[in-house]
Image (cartoon, rainbow, N blue to C red; front, top):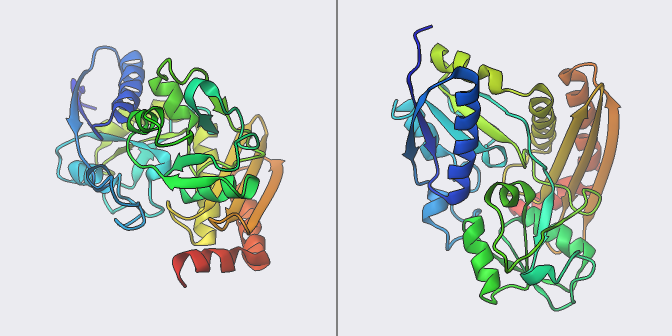
Length: 317
């Protein structure tokens, strides 16, 4: 393999996306010695239309497509994504990538001075900000009288809106908070237990994507792949695929793989919280195919038990 001296890294321009790209670059530098990096900032449709809901601007792939175009157009060598933003189907030519060690997948409740430490303890008239239908459904299932209000934008932008008084609390991904840090006005974060709120598929994981034909990049980034993290993400995505869902449906799934076992949590619910379904399972990690088949069976059972109706109603079908 020809020695790689410069790697062009495509990333969204937000503070969190740049921090995530830096994490990947630091790992590559540790593994391969002195590598020069060139950041290629790519603004996506999801970044450009922050005043509209994700559903209204196309849903799946709104934070991803432009970065993939940069790869396909040879304007970048790798792209660093949040795994939860990745659609189920990737374009031909860039169906390749690795999943590094996953961060904490849980969601977190933020409030000024950490005044509200759990969803259960929120006042009935509290205004909670989130752009996620999955989070809205689970918040309402726990605390039906809370007001959930659309809150899009980068994490730092959303926190500023809360501190400015637009929201009493926010629910965001804990991994993003850990990677960026919190302003002193927020104080400590309050992670939400998995038993209360099931995370998004892929939450906490990164995806380092490259062109399928680029053997140099394949060999360069291959050591970043962490098998248990990658397997957990694959299990979750298989579950979501079997449900027929995408990035913006009120569905949560998390698979933790440790030692020779896997542990799985799933949620499907209506945004108003009136219909909420949870499933939990565990099994022996013989191989990914066995675990995938098990969670696909769970998805089928949930569909037959009412999830099909919930998802169809959400999609207007």
